[in-house]
Length: 42
Image (cartoon, rainbow, N blue to C red):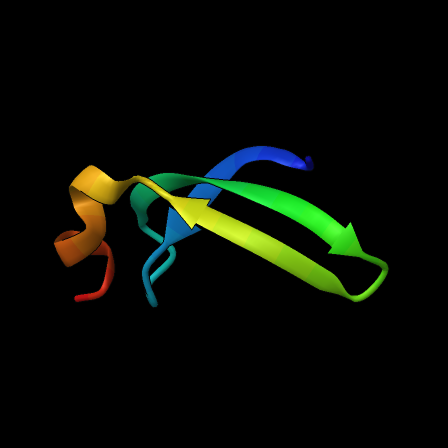
């Protein structure tokens, strides 16, 4: 796990916190907060 990090919008403003897991040398698995799912995809 890389750890918690910020999910930012196009202007660089904070939208949510996410967890990032490195699953291979070139692939990552990103887990967002399910409560904010609708807001994060705006």
